[in-house]
Each structure stands twice: as structure tokens, then as C-alpha cells.
Image (cartoon, rainbow, N blue to C red):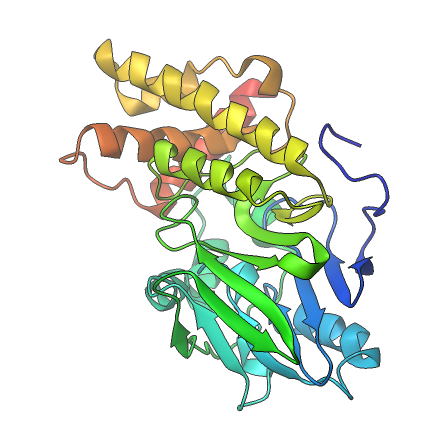
Length: 322
């Protein structure tokens, strides 16, 4: 296991009990699209943390949770952010389920809608982007998905009462995206971090700034959780948050130095020395993080757009692999 992993919870696909009446749903290997989720059960109700990237995966997860939910049905759900691998399965929840999320989530869901990803997969861009796009998204079924937006905006720290149990929703973005919400279960010492945390893989900063994400890391650590479920990767502890925080500091420092030296963001990304983080899977995500860092340093810098970012990530990965 990578540094920060909680060795008491095996990193295997499926439902894992991580505390009394709290479960994580894990999906190795944690790379693009292979996200985690969770279930928090009270006396007569449950709260779901995130759905998954497609309908078959979400059905599989909900079926596995069926041993818990008949007597404690899901009454509330949380989308930790708007990337599709955390919300595209929303439509499979019962109509009466209240879905909570940051206000930014609905717009991001539609901006990265299933048909957008399908178009990316169906367009011939040539090497190396074609192979890279299929590596990222080719394992998922995007047909037949109807986007279901969240119902309840999370505008500030919010406490849900779920079957007599306290579940705290903590908006800690912008960081990974423009609207990131962590879910804290105080009586169990459990934190569901969503994509505020990547373990055993490279973080990707679509929004930022890095200072905001680092502050979110500090806020998660201050909660003192005993068990943390990341958005991707194995279950961890605060040590895992500290490790990812160090990565963000490392990349942001180099991006600032490159910006001050007059380098373009593309050059900065391709010349980035990842140091001890170079061996993390999906290291090419530094392209997106560098682009986001530069846009905060220069607000007039245009958005490169998803196709350009994925093209550059594909090139970065191809060059670094030799």
C-alpha cells in the first residue's frame, strides 16, 4: 500500500464496513473514472455519498447496499462535486431522495455531460490522444444516462439528521473543482473527502487555486478523522492528506517560479520536476493543475478547453513513458 493507506480496509472492489453503520464503496485502481462512494446508516434512514460514472456501476453498488437499505432507506444523498464519476448515476435514486451539492455542481454536470465524453471518444484526433481518451473513459457505458441535478444547494456548513445520526456537509472548495463538499460523520470518526483527496494517484486541479485546496486539506486534518475515504484510491488517515498536501505545495511552487520566469504554462508543465511524486499513476494530470495555477496568476489567460488539455496530457504521458 502507498503511504497513508489504512491497512485495516482492503483496497478491493465492493462494499467495506469502515465504522459502525458506515461503509465505503471502493473501485480499484482509482484511476480516471474509478471513484469511491459511501453509505451512512441511521436508525431508520441512510445517506449515500456519491453515485458512480455510469448506470451499470451505480446499479451494482446500490444492489450491494440492499442488505442495509430496506429497513433504512436512502433519504438523502450528497454529490461531493460535479465530475460525472461522482454523479452520473443520480437518476437511479428514488425520486423522493434529496440530493445535496454545491451550487456549482449542476453546471459542471452539464458541461461534462455523457454525450460530451461520448463525442470525445468518437472523434478521431490521432495519436496519442485517441488511445489516451480510451484509456481514461473507454471502460464506461455513457449511453442512456439522464442527468439528475441536485435538489438542495450546500451554501455553508450543514448538518443533516439521518435516522437520528448527525452527518455534516462541509463546503471546502473551490479546490479540485469550483464546488467541493466533504461529508463528516462525527460519531464514527469518518470523513468522505470526495476528490479533495486522491490516494495512490495524482491529484488534478480543475479549479483551484492551490492555496484554497491546501486550506481544505488543513480543514480536513483539523477534524481529526480516524478514517478517510478519498474520492479515488484506498481508504486512508490524515497521513494521506498530508502527503497529497505536499504534492500540491510542490507543484504550485514550481508553477509560480516558472510563471515569474516568463515561461508559458505549457512549457512549465512539460518541464515540471515532480521529484518524489514522479512515480504516482496519472502523473500527466500536472498539465491541468499547471494550467489552473497559471490562470490564477494571470486572470486574462484563456481557458485551454478540455480537448486541448487532454491532448497535452496524452503528449506528456507519451513523452515521459519514453
